[in-house]
Image 1: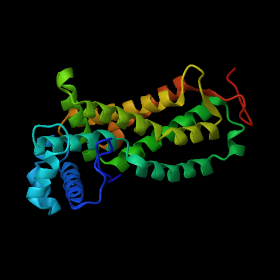
Image 2 (image 1 turned 30 degrees about the horizontal axis):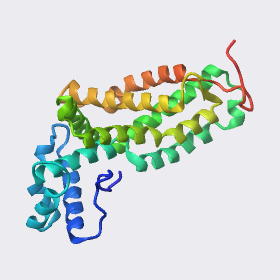
Image 3 (image 1 turned 90 degrees about the vertical axis):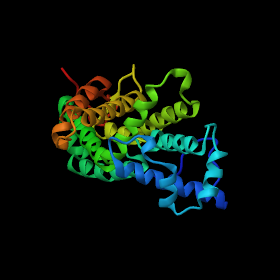
Image 4 (image 1 turned 90 degrees about the horizontal axis):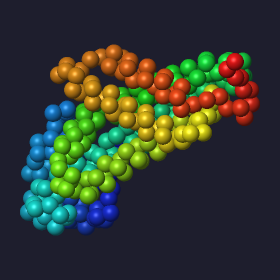
Length: 267
């Protein structure tokens, strides 16, 4: 998981004592968010507690956050920065998850080398692609961890419940950027899987469409896991619906690639 501060245009360049103090309190706030789980709201992470955890000078941190952003107080600006962090960073595991999944994909590739795939009909290769995407998707969820994702869902829901004219433009941009970047970081992985199994995206779609659909499905399944009951079901039970739905997405978005070295076609 990326431990960098919120990435938006007004983020200060780190280095000065003031900037380092802000960075330390923001990092402390992230840790508090992770620890407190699904019921978290931003106000459950007081700036004062983040300052204490970070060990930063109280007066200078307040002055720093007071002059940062457009909120009415240092606490408002700090909480908005935390919200931006959740919306931008805490989705689909971040770059660390992608690196982990690339390593796991090698096992699938080794189990189904090109010469073995050459004799398989489209239906079987499509099923293998679905199985690979679904399996790696569950691994991405496990890598991310439920508390971080649940906190993000709670914050996104709280923001969405506000009147349109009261939502900070910075928060809107953070949400859209987080969704876009989370989808795009998986594109090379999907392309590699599709190519290996001799499949391609259908002409009426793009790989971005598929990546966005899988991301939305994963986040919706996480939300269902969160809100279904106070007791979280076992992962294999909760994510059985995800696996089945990915099958439908693969069938809708992908087709056999006629340029594959050993194409096979449906009758």
